[in-house]
Amino acid sequence: MSKRFLYYFNMRALFMGIGLSRLLTYSKEYVLLSFLLGTIMGTIYLYFVRKNNNKFINILLSIFIMIISLVILINMISTMYLVKMNRIFILIPFILLVIYTLSKNEDVITRISYILIVINILLYLLSLISLIKYFNISNFYYTNNKFINIIKSSLIYFIFSTSGVLTIREDKNIVKTYLVSSVTMLLIALLTYGILGSNLSSVLRYPEYIILKKISISSTITNIENIVSFMWLIDLFMIYLSNANSIKKISNKYILYLSIAISVVSTIIINTYYPYLLFIYYYSPFILSAFLFIYFFINKKTQES
Amino acid sequence: MKKILLILLVLLVTGCSDYTELTDLGIISSILIDYKDKYYVTIEYLDKDDLTNTVSCSSNTISDAINICNNNIDKHFSYNHLNTVFITENINIEELVYFFLRDPEINNNFYLALVNNDNIFNKEKNIGSDVLSILKENNYDDFFSIMESIVNKNKDINIPIYDDGIKGIALYKDNKINMILNKNESNIFTLLNNNNSINIYNVCDDDFFSLNINDIKVDYIIDKNIKVYIKAYSSISELTCNVDTTKKEDIVYLEKIASDNLKGNITYMLNLLSENKINSLGINKLINNKYKDLNTKFYNYPYEVDVDLKIFKKGLLLK
Image (cartoon, rainbow over all chains, first blue to last red):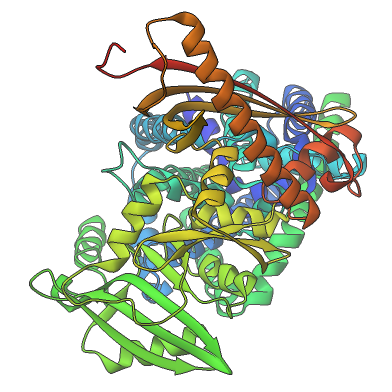
């Protein structure tokens, strides 16, 4: 079975709460240009950099992505849905579900992605159609943004969109899926900036969630942001699951459980103290870019040899 | 092992901890906030039998005052259906916006209204819901638009004044009340914000006629001066002038009077905003876009108003 839907989820997942808010903060009115440059960089990178056979680096990157995705997921749920609930009670069922899914063979995960893609696309289209009327082109007003910031936001897009698929990629050509996911993310970014404007999209932690609060279908169906934002939960669930599965494939079950335990303990520690969360927010692009560089370096060495 | 996992999963997803029964929820309809040395908060919430109840309290911060109110009643406050927030002129609007913006439980679709006294609630009525309907019907800015203008700093905000009905609009400059518009001025102001549900009173000789604006489009074009193009489609709602509406020249005559009248009113409003340097129409960002300079201001540019008003309905009467 093709893994293209898994790639699609993984290319989008890291934007929630970290990627998109940082990207919009830098790009401001030049969202389109930033996405174009970022997509070009990502396409070139994914075309030339193939699967890496270095187990240690793969496991390390998978664990880091699992930590980021779990931190975002638990924070998102405890901020939006279950505000007063203890985060441990959110974490435990999620981890149990992941362990149960991992006890099945790989085809099950791919089949889950086939089912979830339908729900994801439906929610995506619903949000797009209901929010398009709030899009205001005048929000793309002049802010005296510097070109270096556009480059920074392009790099952020490139880093967050490509690092999620490095450990799981198998197909030779994933550029088509990358382009499709880039278009969907671009539309969300344009919509977010077009609705919120420059400063507001920078001060909000989850700008892509705040715009969902405006969804109103013929004035009768309102307050459905929690349902529509499930598309982000699906992305995060799939990136965690697929990275855990990639560890399972290249190592044994003890390393897999150890990796899951590391991600859980790290998430609990990070969630107890806000500056740790800020560390993830500010430094995750640098850590991910280091991995991208290592992958590029290893790939070059492999091709030369 | 798999079965144990499944049993644990099933046991853990049966409900939420700290849940509240619907009957124990105090669904907030509106909040009135005043400031005199400290914050005075009155919360209108839904009680049983479709009645509303209010609870008042005070503290040094808004959140603390609301918490005290919540502790004084036997219900747990829910903000999901917040309709209106009433504020007095003493409230720092920027602080208020950031307070509501921070809380994930509060929706952004409620409305803000300015009040002069704190005696607006009535047990028999759901004031928050009633005011929301009026403000929504008349296309006033909701909290989301106000929040957007304040945080993006690209537009001065305006908030309707409520006193048993909408009595005017308070125009803010740098987040402080600068000017109060009366009912007629408010109509012209809302029209400049592309609101089409207003009536224009016109005089012809010793009589009058009234037009209802059905559709309006206001365009601001920045050149050497600010060109305000208004294209409006209207219908006759009242007519006592000695004209024959079956004749084209008489319709043109009425259109000319109404256009000149509207042009005069709009020029007056634009001058008022310009003299007081209030950027309520958000023209500054259009100028900044045009000249790529954040220091250019709309009040340094002259205006040119062009009104194209057409009468396209006369009602059931032929003449």
